[in-house]
Every structure is written in C-alpha cells, then in structure tokens.
Image 1 (cartoon, rainbow, N blue to C red):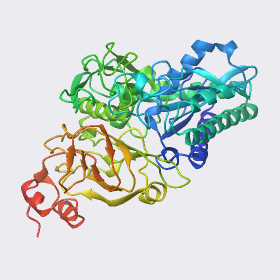
Image 2: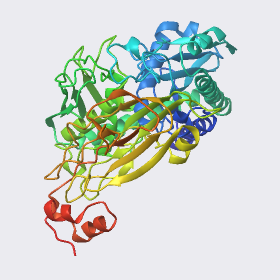
Image 3: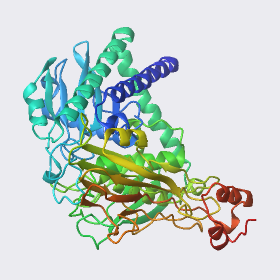
Image 4: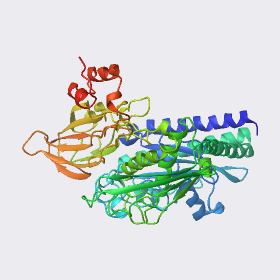
Length: 552
C-alpha cells in the first residue's frame, strides 16, 4: 500500500477519535466527564490492537486486553453487527479499576470483523462500600463496586434493558450513571458507524492493510530508537507512602531495564508483594507506564500504537504490586501509576541521560458525597487534583496540571460553587514547593474548601511521606498534604488517603506535591531566579538558603 493512503487513513482515524472525544464530553452528565474528561475513545483493529492513542494515554493498552477477552469468550460466531459489549472488570477485562466502565462495538465489512470502536469512562458511582466507589482503604475488589465481566448490553442492534437495570440498581447515582452510559454507548456506536463508512469508501481490505502498516511503522520506529541506545542494564526503585490500610508500611516499586539486540525488556519482579489496600496494578497499567516513559525518553513525537509491543518485553512475578491477582483491590491505581513512571524514568536515565527528569508530583482525587446537594443537582462531587512536573535538562517543571499519563482537567471553581454546596476560599500556587535546582520543579497547587452542608469526604493522594525526588543535585519537591480545619483548635493534619465525615462549616485544605529539581541549585540562572521571586514562586529567603543567591 502506498504511503499517502496509509497516512490519509491514519489521519481519518485520528480525526474520528477526536470527534468521539468531543461528542462524549459535550454529552456527559457528570463533572467527571464534562469537566475532568476522565475517559477515552478509540478505534482498534480486529484483534484489539490500538491504531491511534487517545488523550487519556493510560487507557491505551487496556483495549487489547479487553477485546482479546471478548473474542476469547464469544469467538467470531458469537459477535454480530449491532452488538455492544460492556465491562468494568480489572481482572477479566483489564480495566484500571471498577469505576472505569468500557463499551466496545464491532465493525463488520464483507461479512467479517475488521475493527472495533471502544470507550472507557469513569462512573460517578458503581456501588461498593463508600459513595463514589473509589475507596481509600478497600481490602478486596468486592468493596469497590459491581463487577461486570465482558457481556453484551446491545445485541444485534437491540438494547438489553435488563443489563442496564442491573447496573443502575447498583449505583447511588442512577441519573448520572444512566446519562453517562447512554452518551458513552452512543459515541461508541458512532465510532463503529464511521469506520464502516470508511470501509464502504476505501474497501475493507484497504482499511485492514492500512491498520497493519500503521502498526508495523510504529514498531519499526521504536526499534530504531531502541537500537541507538547503549546496551546494558539499569535498575531503579521507589516507595509509595502506604497502601491505605497498613499505614506504617511503604510499598516498593522496582524495575530492571535491559537493552539488548534492539529490544527493551522491563522486569518488575523485584516489586513488593501485592498489597492489602487498593494500590495494586494489573499488567495493562504497567504497560501504560512503560510506553509513556519509553516514548518520553526516546522520542516525544512518536505516535503510540500497539505495534510498539513488538519492540518491548515485560517480565512480572505473580502476586506482586505490579501483577496482582484477584480479589486484590485496585481503586487507587493512578497514584501508583505516577510513582511507577518516576521509577521507570529514573532507570531510563542511564540509557539516555539528556532526557532525565526529576520526580513529578502525584495527581490525585477528591470525592465528596453531600448530604443533600444543590436543588436539582447531584450530591456527588468528584475532582481530579492537579500536581506538578519535575525539572529536566533545559526546562523547569510545569505547575498545577495533571502529572503524567492522563491529560485530565482540573474542575473550575465556578462549576464547583454553582453545582455543589461549597465555597473555594483559596486557590493558589505554594511558594518554595518546587524542588530547587538549576531547573526548578513545578509548584504545589493548594485549594481550600468551606463546606456548606454535611458531607463524607474521601481524599486519595501520595507523596506526603516520600516527596518527589530531585535529579543530578536537585532537591526534593514539596510533599503533598491534607489539613482539616486549619488554624483552629480542631486542626487535623492528614498524611495519607482516608475518608472523613465532616459537618457544615468545616474547612479543609488540600495540597498536591511539588516537582523535584534538576541540577545544582547554585547554578540556576540569576535572571530566572529573580523572575521566580517576582512571580511568587520562590521566596527571597529560599533564594539565599537553597540557591545561594541574594536577589536585590
């Protein structure tokens, strides 16, 4: 097939993914979809291999596992035009956690499957022991909500209402979940229809050949980049604060990377045994961390797809934190992803030191279940909390953004105050929280909330006990934190993920971790440090004590 046709079809699929993404967040009911955009939409080939990566990068490797399981259970003969499959199962479907629900629709042409359209999105509540389902201290996946193995929710174009009734009977937020599910099914079916139209226009065999060429091109590109690396082995490890249940025990994540004969092997066997609390990972999440870190280290402009799997090998040890077995809980997977990325990047620095970067902060989550909520609105508030990147050679870290993997959005204050009974009394960057270095880490983000009604609050975060690391002489970033009723006699400083029952009038401050610094702080450009002081990023005292410079 000629290169022009391949590129045209790749761009067609990329545009379709963007179109699906746009229609979904414009149609979503919950703030999780409308504001945070905690979802992905994709097109995969007939075996589940991803063609173009979605903005929500860590979902990218999941679809191969999910579609593979659908094909295993139903086979070609059990899948028909107009079918739509649903699953949220971390072990049978490879989903990140129970709150993420996936829908998949086949694309038929010339009487056979040529592709699948798919989507994954976080649901406001899917049952479990706590409102919002994402428990900070679950000890088994059954605490985290209703489990749905890959099954049909549409068959031959006809709805199976009993499946929807079952899902809605297991949620505390049926209106939100129904709205998001309906929108998600619609956008998934739209993706399948659009690919069918491409088959009609270009021919099914042309589409299939183009997909194969796109996958092979990505594999060849990554192999060439890996072949340029020095052969050898590098190891790194890092610690999570805890698993949320055994609070005094940190959790070790470890990787050994071997580059040889144009292949990169990632061995996670030295990671700790799977945890009692909800910080366990399935291989699909580990794969996301590996490809993210590998592409970031070797070629940020590389376009990920599942063809890249041909250039990478994974080694796991059973029943470890990076290869957990059911029924180990997984709801706090994302903060583990972020720490694992830091560990992988640390090991990758041996092979490509020019792309080394300091540790990032930990994007995290806040969930509030209000006793009543605003009239006519929802009483379930879910937010993604931004953090910061570490500094790297030639650049400072970015502040107040979702760190690594997700490309999620911070919910605007106007949305929070108009839809929920709360006031945001402070929203700011915290001075001196970006790790000092020749290139400074990004700053911590801080928000203060005042509750106007009673509420159950779940705060999930990491990097309070072990802040983001500095690199090449750079200093650590500021730790994450959570303080209830600051400055009062009832002040409570919280060091780990937990659930709290708060009253109207209570306040709390959440602070994300700052990014680590890169290089000797005494080598920071004087003009850059002066600008930091002028903008409130660094105090004059820190300029003297940490950077060794006195700015007039």
